[in-house]
Amino acid sequence: MNIGLFIIGDEILSGKRQDKHLSKVIELLGARGLSLSWAKYLGDDREQLVREYQAAFASGDLFFSCGGIGATPDDHTRQAAAAALGRPLELHPEAAELIWQRVQQMAAEQGTTPERDHPDTRRRMEMGVFPQGAAIIPNPYNKIPGFSVGSAYFVPGFPVMAHPMIEWVLDHRHADLHRAVGTRERSLIVQGAMEASLTPLMERIEADFPGIKVFSLPSVDHPQWGRHIELGVKGDAAAMDAAYEALRAGVVQFGAVVSTELVR
Image 1 (cartoon, rainbow, N blue to C red):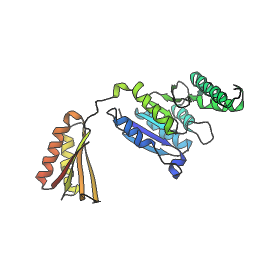
Image 2: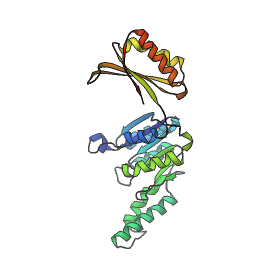
Image 3: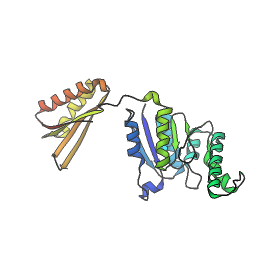
Image 4: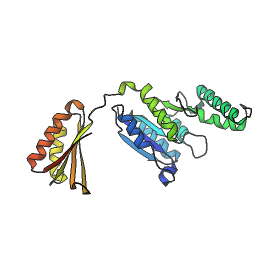
């Protein structure tokens, strides 16, 4: 199953805030033997969000969406997800109870009396209005839940909330996807060759070893290796070693210099 990530917010695109989700999600997936297939940064544009979510739902991919699930005018994720699914929005009863618990907790801390009909409480309840049929994602930080529909998961933009919620999803909803964490890729530093010349070798390796991807990362000014290509394989662990040896043999046969071999 492909795994994707949406990172939502004008503040990310404008540079007001630095994204902390991409690297963390890659880390959380990697710790479970999984990898990220795609990631997209999107602004607070409801029409664009609807289009992107429609495509993601149609793909069948598992995906996470970070940000925009609040109840202020610049939050569009809940509404866009509902529109993309063609479902109405409704107050989730369990989310409403969790939000009320949070309201009571805040009132106790401030020494005030909570009121269910207070305008502030009603506005907070908007954060529990999800697409019809959604399930909740628990939020250990402040109880305000995220939501899921199928294998699509929507969490807040705050890393302190989003990251443990994503971890919870991976461990409680998709433990069946976890794989043993071992060598995920092997590569070599190649000098004295151009990518174009090595392309037929790369294509042959992928054809001969189904489930293996070949990657090529050229560099022109590396402080240690200078102009070089990091050439490697990743994918199916059962075929990894054989594919790597075939790649290495092809590079040597080509006449290029292998200066370093890497295992990750």
